[in-house]
Length: 195
Image 1 (cartoon, rainbow, N blue to C red):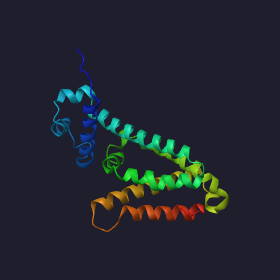
Image 2: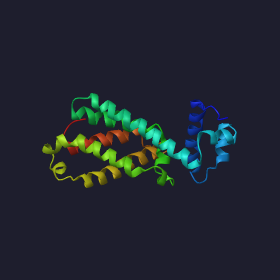
Image 3: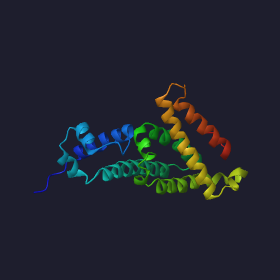
């Protein structure tokens, strides 16, 4: 007889595993660690996930999908390109900052499970569509190819996420507001608008 699945238990397994993968590393975390952290028997873990690989894939795909779908939905409601860029910087980047365990996993040794390439492709397409209306105002944007934008986005996006991790884990005095402020200044100077 198959066990009934409870979404609360499934989410508990995902949250506990996310914390463990982030803090201990994916390869240093065992199913036994997840059992200890959740308090569920090993059979319960395997009722919801066939393997540790499946757990990490679920963590990354579900969290990214949730973030990206909300971003697309929110941006679709905004009429102007400036407002869309403002929303991306003011709301959605800080939202990622709030889930540093997810960010650690996304860029961890388990990168082969995160399909980061696909996620960055989608993000590049989105950002490219957002900055296109500003190309006439900026020589830099007129010369920007999609490939160059992707390189810039990867460097910038990964840089601000790493900066947020550093801000949270050190005493260097860097604040997330500094990161967002610098991002706004850089983007405003690049596209020629005040954010």
